[in-house]
Image (cartoon, rainbow, N blue to C red; front, side, top):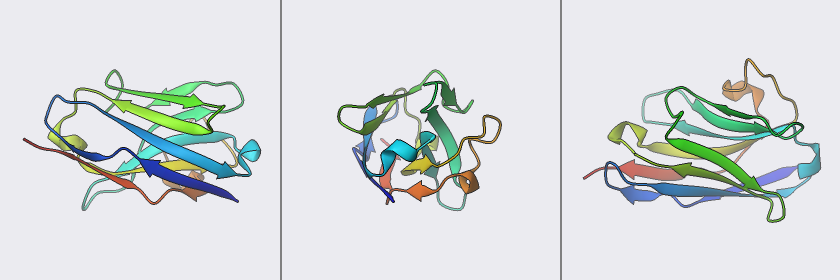
Length: 126
């Protein structure tokens, strides 16, 4: 089992920045990928970015490429998402996720992921 706990959400003005954190615990050595998703009201859960733990490759959705940066601190067992140039359209609940397998062409499909955090709200508004 793997436990994920997100933090760092909040209210930010358009153009601002936030850094989300995800603390991982449990059997993390079995994970093939860790990543971030979000879900806005009335919309499907959207894959934003992930790291394949085997080779360290990073993946980004087009909607956030150039604005969001994923990183991890292995010593702290923590995953981060640095979000810059935030827009009202980025308002959503943000989730950390972990997977026991990895599919390069399907990483953004939420059904491919095995563990989820409880989510943290990000609101971008003036």
